[in-house]
Length: 208
Image (cartoon, rainbow, N blue to C red; front, top):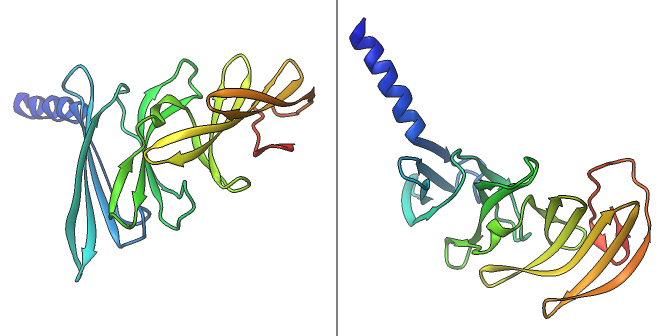
């Protein structure tokens, strides 16, 4: 009985120190690629390691190894969203929890079909709730704070480049164009919304 109890405690402790994820059904292209992700929580900062495979002659061939350190302890992975509209799904891995629980911070890995590898978007963990915006064919970040802010990004090399912003607070909405890191006010107007967490698909014209 004591041996069984020891094994149970050891198993729980081990599972808390290591987390695993594997997928070949939605990652990049269904049943053509596979990713295995391991998160080691033993140190002060969790470390994420991933191995990317491509199928060839019904065998999985390793094509990439990668790793990074993160802040948050739990491992969550999204593999079913194409964030740059190139026909290949990309990967988001939980990175940290922002001040408000609804602000999810993730590491974004964009698949490059020419290089056949995942590209680390180095500043993606600076912006919460990243999603593809089909209206503008860009990436949006939705931020909850004293106001609700929608940021609009282009992918430039391995970084997110902010080119527009819409803010909603105090029953007013403000839209900005961003050029050379300077915000240019395009529109300010009274705005009512039935949704407390209102976000926008366009900044010019302003549209939810």
